Length: 495
Ligand code: AMP
Ligand code: ZN
Image (cartoon, rainbow, N blue to C red; front, side, top):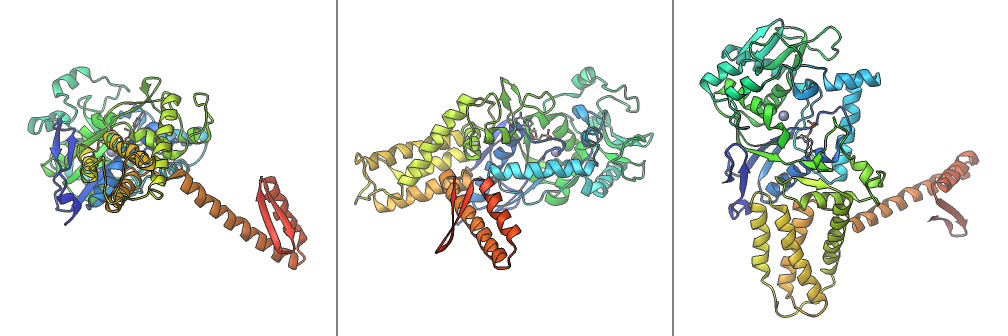
């Protein structure tokens, strides 16, 4: 029997405001879509928090035995400044400022995004589609919405008719906004006169002559609206109705609200069963954001190269810091908080190392390991409550230390259960990495590389290519790796 059948996973559904029992559309399978980054800048730690939160969800669902199709897009066109329908395309703007191709911008920051998430030990999604790779699908959806009468074309652009849609299906269900308030509160940011109503949003925009990222369509040479790409890609890979849609809290309105309207206009039903929103990471009490400059980059944390830090912190410690908060709580970043997380992380890893050294006794005294294990599951089943899970793990850390000190005992069977449970939750579910183990691993790799260079140098010398052999020796020396030639061959030392 699959583990998921024994566990009652509940998750907080943002659209109902309730914690609900998770029941997937197809038994044993989960379809999950998470809005990906707009790749026009380096990802900051706030962005990473959201993606780590959903990595936790992905990992736990997989741990429970579900077959998960996790789709996370790359926004490489259509996302304008201010999240409104006006202003420059964020990627095109960066390309103009740096005098490079828009696709160079996309490539540079997509690579950064992947490298950064890999350092945090995030699993890659199952499918990572791009907006520019799905223009045809987006055009098809616009045609469908036009056919159904919920959009209109003006001067080569197509807008979603929010007022008309609202006469048949309520607009604003997710964000709790109602159309009357929106009508009163919507400002026109750009003096945009094409729209019938200011709260309508663009499905297709005609490109101005200077706009480089453009595609042909029945309406004009132009580009799709930002909200449309997620509807197109989630529908294509997960179907008209799927299980989970996630993203940061700041995407609820207008982005997700518009996604719901588009899908309902096409299909006549809501696209998603469970909406999940991750809360914000703050710095100095304010939301971390690219636009305000109030942010810190992961690489600055790994190198310690930022004035607010007293030292560098490893990616695993930063991930642990993030998971010590529940994904729906606001989390404030600070040096002190990271120092505290580092202490806790080290204590956890030391206890894991101790597990291999503990002496077993005929009986366990002082704890009930089976109920402790269930408590770990109960924490995660309660809307992925990682801080409560971590608190339970620390209860066991305390017990492991007591056994080590001879103040408590553990049987062989219980020790096996504790080891399996801790490994599963710490490494598979929380996705933490044992830094000391990974350092050993990189030391092994370094030795392998240097030994390869030593062999290449010996070959160069045998061929009397002394220029190459000297170059290998000197450049390694510059990196602090000394080669020593002896009777037994060449050895190396690292200074
Ligand atoms: P963007 O590239 O701006 O579309 O953002 C990518 C993801 O990061 C979205 O899901 C945002 O909601 C999320 N995000 C942006 N700022 C923060 C923050 N300060 N804390 C947590 N998540 C954030
Ligand atoms: Zn999206």
